[in-house]
Length: 441
Image 1 (cartoon, helix red, strand yellow):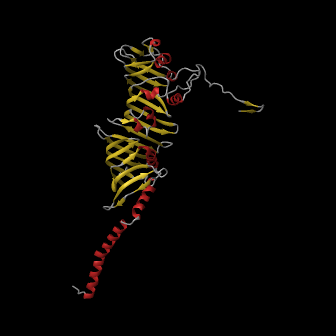
Image 2: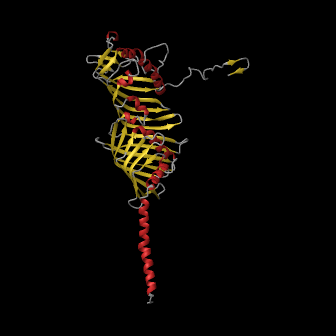
Image 3: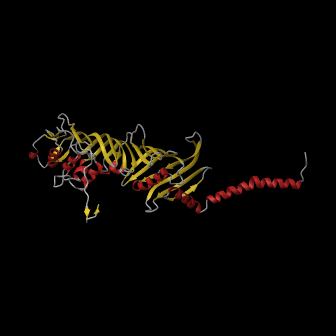
């Protein structure tokens, strides 16, 4: 055993003290000081802004443990208008290892939010963020993200909807990217969560973005759903939807399918507010199947029931004349406004026309009051969709009544394709305009 000089032993002890005690203490102290620097929170907010494309405000930011970031007082806003998009009391972010599609592992970002609130009138900004993620146009495009919240609030105008057990994620893959969220409605017993899925398919040419909505046992207000699905806006804020919607955006417009039930749809907002007829009452529309493409309804089957309510004599007369429905009474003897007890019918609409069949019991009529049927089913086949427009708008000098509402209906209801006359194999001739002696167009 060799002997060390006393001075050498002292130098070794000092070196060990500095290396094992002083240096780690200095590093930890510097780290603590850096965490308290005034610009630290602003720097982290700027980093998140470049990641999300939204303005970010933070009350505080800390790293309670290695690999975990804790954000307090988070607020996201639109960079142009400054309008608040979402806010959150606390947001915890951490990294874990998760499996990838090749059987290996990849880092996954785990987000846990406390009391997040989403503003419905800023849905467009949220849609843009999701679209950038799906298209891979952000620095976070290759991230796998999992997020959860015990409770979240979605605000739409003066109404708000509380969601519970919110879980979702964003998963990139070579074939595309998918974002999905599952949740339950507070105060509603649900056998399974509702879910919304948005996917970007890069394998199609050109790439497509589609969404899927499944409400499970819950009923969603159409006013809230119309923020993301404008086609539901004409139904009014009081009506509710329960069912399934799938849609995909193509170069020629939206295409997809709908199955479900519309509840508490006010007939007045669909008819009386837009056409010179009176029809009131709350209705329920059961959509057995509906298909649309290029932004136009192609076919739909289901049934409608409503009542009691008020109907105008002019609407009954127009339905008899234009839709060839059977009059149950002498319409000339009816008052201008009639109280009806029930409106119930099966419907089918496609390129061949509109079919209506009565479901009122026990008469099997379409429309009845307390004593008698007012309208019965048609004895003829399907009626052209244009007959529906002529029913809603009084006859005038043009074949199809030209109003703003009929224009919207003509652009969204099914129309038959152009067919050549029997025995004709060539298209109809086209006219040319002759200008002068030598120029033709």
